[in-house]
Length: 552
Image (cartoon, rainbow, N blue to C red; front, side, top):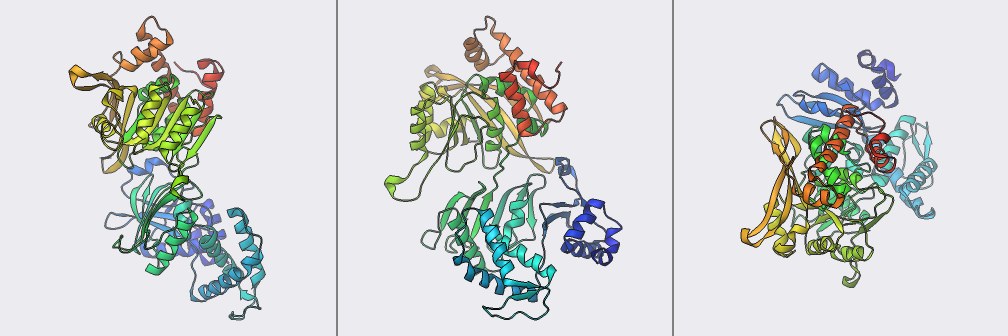
């Protein structure tokens, strides 16, 4: 029946899309309407390539898990639009949905409390099946004893919306499922905007139907993260069950255009360093340099402004740390993901009585007592920065992210309130990596714009001397290795530690590691865990001889 209904669409699409339309009739309805309006059909892609970023005109369709599909296209005015395609409820189905929701909520207290979302989904399906009679034609009535008669296709639609709104994320469920989305921005009842990993900022067709509905939704989301909001306490910040970070502004008094929220989506699998090189976020030489430094316990801070890719870069670098080392992470929200077996993950607690709260300062002090090889701070904001420098001064290797657009501004922030690190301590930090989101050729890109080494504090110079080892050439989009044969850290810290008679020998180590990264780029080895395993074998099974490929 579906084939006959959408025959003209079927004749023009791939087998993969035909199968999707058979399983999801609403997709066929959408495509038929789109073809009538535009005279064409979008290109169906199971996976998106980052090369699409350079396309001026977009018209593509991709799945994010049945029954949801995403259509990204360029409008006549040149702006891109993001349409989430979902099953649609007409007035009759919506009425049945409301009745069934009421019945399920009445029966739910009689069930065992579900401990996981999977258990909740199973309970939902069970209660729905107990409440419906599929195939009956009679109109549903608000009767607590009788079942609701629905057609088979209505069952699939109602089941989707019940699971979406109770088990899932409600209105924004398509955005949560989409693996290509970084950030979600919702302000009042206007259309939600997203930051797409490939298409940058783009408007969606999703929005909340009313102010009261949005307020109810924000209260539910705040309760999920254990930090309720109200008119008295309108701002909440925390992590969703999948690890995504959410910031909620609830009250109209504070958010004048209506309640709002921002979600920074969490990726369970980090992006690999090889992928960052392929994207030209950094160069193979930069990766080889960072590998050499982290392998030898140097202290590195990843700095940049908001959305510059600091945490992404930090996670990508962590496999460079030798796999047998003990890692401690301290964060407000769990975002740092080292691939090491010996990993202690510490998270702050800012709810409850004052004497039961735990901040980053407390976590770092606790970490120091455990003598880890590396302490990693998700983001330094305040007084915990002084503890990080104390840790470095006592011989602990440290990494962290920090909001600063240059080394100079980083030093100013660390030596001023509220962190107040003495300027003479700053040289305990070895390396500062600067990341920026740049606008180039009409596209937003992330680039490592500089890597600078901190040599030390010199009173006669009136401050901390730094040395640039990498600089980004914005005109040619290239990363220049200024520190080749001129690196303070490589020669005076690492080469001496390794006992090299000729300090310049350390550059051969960097070159070897750069060649390994370059070969992985050439072979398109970008999967995070595949990259991690190659690094592990390099450390544990004899260096170059353990590699699954040859290098020249």
